[in-house]
Image 1 (cartoon, rainbow, N blue to C red):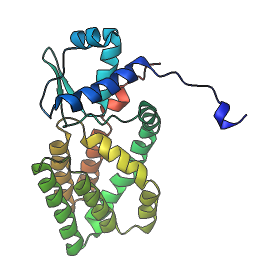
Image 2 (image 1 turned 30 degrees about the horizontal axis):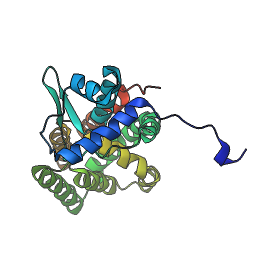
Image 3 (image 1 turned 135 degrees about the vertical axis):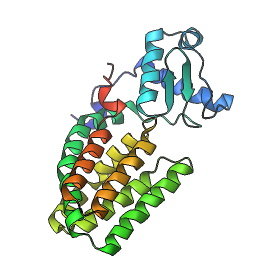
Image 4 (image 1 turned 90 degrees about the vertical axis):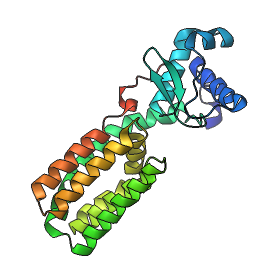
Length: 233
């Protein structure tokens, strides 16, 4: 059967709510820190159930676009609601556990080797990446580029061509996991502190301590709202 004649997918009601919320934020000129209307009011205005509104809010939380404060309403984290298609979220949710498992195995060993093999110049590169990430976060960004540079510098300092090649083959998936983690509320500053601990262990030439610090960091990366989300049919 041709692709054109595949079964049609009916749009979920909460996905329509997501689109309406995105349009509302734009039309109302809402910015980061502004509060969205209460779920009850949204349900009444849109003519849908509160369950549909709640499902939409959860998807926005998963994407790090809003923060739902217990008993205090829902607030924008960014200036817009550029919502990622739900199907893309579902697919990333499926592959994320495997990526995180691979990262823990590979990067723990890379940190250990970096503590044993790094040169002074390579240690300086790790430090520069750490400083870059700190500046990004201080400027209001998530620190994604600094994070990428840090892990790349640790990989280079490990002097393991095969492990580096393995990292390269899953680079796109690592980028997804990095972005997913760093958009969690409060995560950039926590990640920076963990990177600092990894750097200090590598600088001190303590392989076991560096491996432990990296394992702790990747386990934190794995704690994302996306993996707690159960997609609604």
